[in-house]
Length: 233
Length: 233
DNA sequence: CGTAGATTTGAGTTCTGTCAAATTTTGTGG
DNA sequence: CCACAAAATTTGACAGAACTCAAATCTACG
Image (cartoon, rainbow over the protein chains, first blue to last red):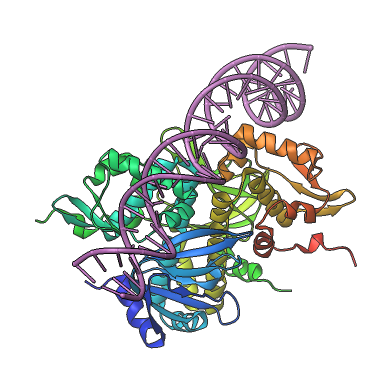
């Protein structure tokens, strides 16, 4: 099956610079002169910014398939994209190149516009999550998102990578690292989550996790019920 | 001077349905089948959604010039656009129409893509504001945004329309209506704001208001230092 | 002028943040 | 492979900001 991801990849690849990243690798997007686009191929990334004085804020999670142009990031100091996963790959190119290509290729233009709209919807949903839910519900939302995106069905439940530190989670969900720790402990106690090795979690039941988050249906619709999670036929 | 707004308007007008709105008028965007686009001509609008059970959340403020396609809103129940201003005008058309037009017109495509990127940047900035600032700072951020967008220089300072109720502000900033009331009272006490008639506020000094919000520079960059606010030459 | 709705304000509660100490994990060198 | 230092996480005690509930005002409008 040819996906939108494939089409975008095929068209942009010849004009892209491949960047292999390791954890904490930082990409510096340009907003204006020589505006850049980053196309995420694999791995999880974070858009972050500094809030004066001495604070950091995660603006959003960036997943494979996402297309991030510099102008779509706010003009905050220290705005950058950092790799959360141990390894990942990003393609970098200039927005002017993308403009030239989409002017010739309506299909590409459509896929890129759709991608940007989806990402805007995710940002808005994240607004709703942070603004409208309790700490516990927010953490459940994040776990659900990662489980749906990267989880794999195993004997004990859905196993997924958790590349974010407590501090990252806190900055993403507008909580405190200590509070996040408490909430995760509580969730382990309620059997909503279990740790396997470090950096990996198991969710025994996605349904129960979804119960813990009022906005779970919307998260599922935007992050997809991944094929890997379906019972094997 | 021909602005991007003019170009977009000129091209889309023949294909649009004009909608004149009054306060609390609700527009229902379609996400999928017959996906809609709303082009804001005048007035302030709110994107809102319901959070089960019995809660509402404002996803973002929508200003004149903004282009809102259905797919850029999250798939939450009760997602809609409501008019905040007493009167406003919106043009409604189908996204498929916009796609057909942009395929023929690279300039239009560029302006629309830029607009969507700016709006994404605003969403991300709003994330940072709600997630990273105190209640007082958030309210200052909102007041600054509205003052920059719609303010006019008068003898006593910058006068601007405040079409949002305390409840709206609370839902937008993730606070409680009572708390918003307290914060605004405190700001009046500190001379950061004063009320003229109902629905209108005066800010004696935008600089002092900006001092009260750590992210003021980014807000100013995204919402512009409006010409009306410049001292008359 | 009177009523319905919005706003303001007070009192008490709860959740989360702050700080500090204990514990676990990770990375490095022997 | 083990020991040790550095970093991250967990947990407790306390403080503070924001929420809830309720009553008092204020405003809009018929």
